Image (cartoon, one colour):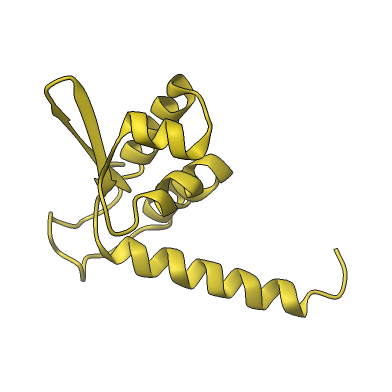
Length: 114
């Protein structure tokens, strides 16, 4: 991720990831609507209009969240004629979303106080 503090090259999965890099990714995940968009894109790509329809949120709000997800490198967007299609930027995000869901469920089950 571009922040001037990391020393990794494109495609280098073993590169050093800084805390600042993780913050960019985690900020992208830290919103209910963005998580709903990511889940809607698991295993498929969709036009923005379909996300608006499925999620029941306005087109400007979907576009705003897609911009933030692109900034966090979590989704990619491609214009095809009059339509803008979105997809997860990396298929490994599907597993990450599954793990986050599982971990959250486990942690909430163990919670004894707030």
